[in-house]
Image 1: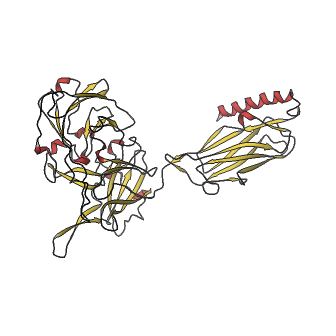
Image 2: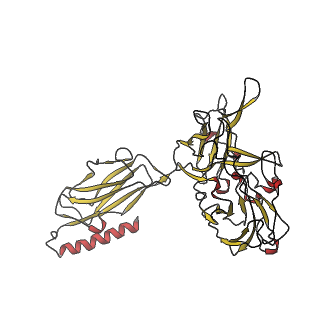
Image 3: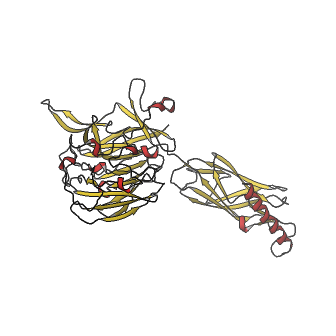
Length: 471
């Protein structure tokens, strides 16, 4: 601000000299007026904005400002004293004044990712004894971004077949929808050279003894993940720590980097399942690949091929520190955009390969993971006579309950069957209303989150809705 003020005063002094030598522009006794700064970032609810004169004004008068807005409405997002009328603000000043001021009151903050500003421009002065400094006649007032206070949202996972993953950023209220089949491998952008596989498709990976990617391999049906089938060592650990990937860390020594047999899992089903059941796991099998990953400086070198091939394709995949992973697709044979930036999402509505017990893979639809690798954590709160979603406040948060596990919500928000009239379980989505969740985002904002639905009016699964509020 000090530099800006000196900058403006310099313009004013130049303007005064110019006026003294140009009787056609103003009298020798005229003064110049300009904004004290070209822009202001709002940090307080009420801010005093200044117009400065190069000398004392000879008489009283007014300065007329035009008002241009971006994504704000007067009276809703902001107001001023004096008031704005017809996109015009008139600011008075007294005789002998060295400045004129008006106040700006911010009524609603900008949430993350939203641009909100107001631009004031001097268009007229009531007296010819005050001359506008053209180079400094405008001021832009910027609304600082803040976290969303909360809202109700619906995650578009796509119905009972749940073909989509939905990434949610609570602080901005934005959601990113990505087809589950759009990616196969995730190459970690951190210091660890680790590769993730797409658990939402029931993928698995098994290390072989060879380092020769061109050696013919055969399918291994024991790798196929189904309910209670498959190997825990061949899936990424569902806790979500980057050290738990099925594929070993890439070694500096190429001889240590083995070939992996990769089962690509299954597609979402194309047929609509019966009401209350899910179809995300019953699609066609996606086949097999063999891969080998080496280091290429600070990047990855991926070698891949069909399992019966005697030649391979090679591609270098770069790290991008702004993201958790760089994603690769065997369908497009290239990198693809999947997750938002690592600090721009908190929850992922997805299908998921979990474990039942320490060694048994089990596939879950209607699953929610928190962005553990980006720093988001979550835990569950049980509703009681004294604790409810409505009365839960920041003072009730137990920081120690945030754990290093991306399943802080997981499947705990729903069940999938009810007991029929004959005593036999019947498939049906059931929302668990006896609990809600606390989520801390990568910026440290803490929210309470309540799932409010998961099925359509006709009972079709795959329609999750939720409510959240900033604590």
